[in-house]
Amino acid sequence: MTREEVLKLLNSNNSETESLFNSAYETKLKYVGNKVYFRGIIELSNICQKDCYYCGIRKSNLKAARYIMSEEEIIDSAMWAYDSKYGSIVLQAGEREDRHFVDFIEKIIKEIHRLSSGKLGITLSLGEQKFDIYERWFRAGAHRYLIRIETSSKSIYEKLHPADHSFERRLQCLQILKDIGYQVGTGVMIGLPYQTINDLVDDLFFFQENNIDMIGMGPYLVSSDTPLQSYYNNYSDKKNEIYLLGLKMIAAARILLKDVNIASTTALQALKPFGREMGLKAGANIIMPNLTPIKYREDYQLYDEKPCLDEDRELCKDCLDNRILGIDEEIGYGEWGDSPHFLQKK
Ligand code: SAM
Image (cartoon, rainbow, N blue to C red; front, top):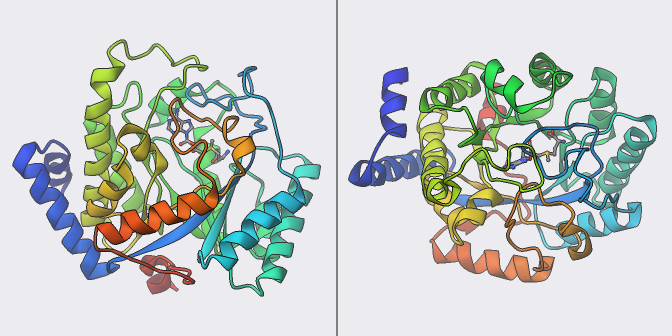
């Protein structure tokens, strides 16, 4: 597809949007099938050394009560996922590079790997790290890594982060992760301040040019405890536009990239109660049910109105089962559901 064609998809309206979603869904059935794979997400800590202007757990947000889950709590959540036949988990946290944290994560990966006999897929989403740390975690048993570039535009990136946050380093991390052998996921936020539709087209071509295996993108949502909180003065009108754009980005990514895994993120659900199911209908094939213990959820609020703050993992599982079966999709219980794009490359 050319840039102009992708731009046209993102600018589609009404019946055109409907046919965009239909053709993305057909592409999904053809290249990845109608199975949805679960990645149970464990938000293990909100302690963060970064200060991103949009994020509710940025280090300067003094309102977030900081926590780190204990080893037992993390293992318990992971093993619940294993016993419930979720093929994989995602360990996500604010960013830390100190030795204590790095060792702690390594120990946990090894333990989950051991207890599940290597059968539970382990994805990490722990931000920027040095080569040897990524390598240690890979050797310990993690095999996928998610690191969003947030936007492929360096100039927008620089407007959304303090001067000591480096766009180049984020790109380098993607390359290092690929070199080590991780299945690599990246993504962007949609509807960011300063971002245009043309920037989103660039984002999609960035994924293609960088041979990305997994895409995790979602709407940008305002967090009232951040410097960007009042950027949009008509935010409630903007929400619907951002939601639709989020779905169109999923559809365009499916049509352009075909055999990658694409997540339908919680941020879509924050905008519309059935936003995640709509994401599946628009071409996504991955869902990340939240396994973080309820007592920590309030404190992992990246943005306002994050859904399911009080829904425990059992409830969440039943609710998701029904919702997914309700849209005639199958759940890939007990399967890793690796990105066909990654398997093809191998
Ligand atoms: N520290 C890790 C990293 O930087 O990759 C993982 C945690 S970070 C909180 C996970 C993702 O949350 C970010 O990559 C960002 O895209 C998303 N996020 C943060 N604030 C957000 C907001 N206000 N709206 C939507 N997504 C947001």
